[in-house]
Length: 404
Image (cartoon, rainbow, N blue to C red; front, side, top):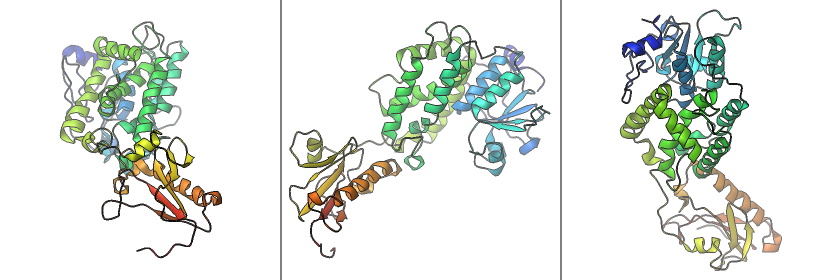
């Protein structure tokens, strides 16, 4: 069976699940993906290459789009789940992909480079495009748009896409310490990529499918499904990008297959079985506590003697000081921080900024501070908290007595 090409199987209407959980047959309805058993390590397959990937992987889908469009046989490239090697963090898989990320490719035939395995989807994709250049579309039109879109996608989207589905414990993502700022950056860069589109033809670069289409389409599946869980005030994709996405999904059978593969796992496993977004901040969990007097101070609706302000924090003198120097520091965006016990890894950055500001303020003799200060956060009823918007007291100006 492995010597039969994918296209022949599709024409015959044969549904062949392999060790990856992928079904090689196109169906009119959503493809159901069933995992099957396989042997471990090098005994998994005698194919020329093994692509270790799973249906939900948007980066792996870039490579799968090439395999499907080029109609490569299972003998040429077999797709197998990393779970057959023990999982993404297993010794066996990490020997192929040191970061423990999908996809990974083993080269099981002799190759002039001497390479035995590759990681990172763009590297794998370009290797397969060169290896099977004579089969199917080239994916590399004479158009720099394709490389521009691929590069922007890989540097500015995939590096932060975890903000759409990772728990707080996995933060920061990329350069962003909190989910809200990462989501804003993700949305911004989708709009930047829209500006790179040619605006003509069915694909991103015109009438010919390119590596840009294979790279961006799976990530846009994530965006269309996940972004509305966090922010439904605007469409998840900008208009031109959305039209391109819908067109490929409806008119290109390969991208329709990719859509089915990814969505099957997102809906049946991530959403319905595991309830992934129920505990994720800004999706299943939101700041629904009432506003406080601090919101009015931030909005400048109530006067305050402000001693320090930037885009993240506001510091002002306490109107009922308990020491000669008494300053309050608050985050401008409460972002769920009604009190310190609500803090998570997503708040690490703002908490650090508050502490740095506290140190700077305590060094300011003009505010009345001398040799040191006391830093206090009251938390909850037992802690004497009065305003449920996290705030840090900086107390000084005299020698303070023992706590208690």
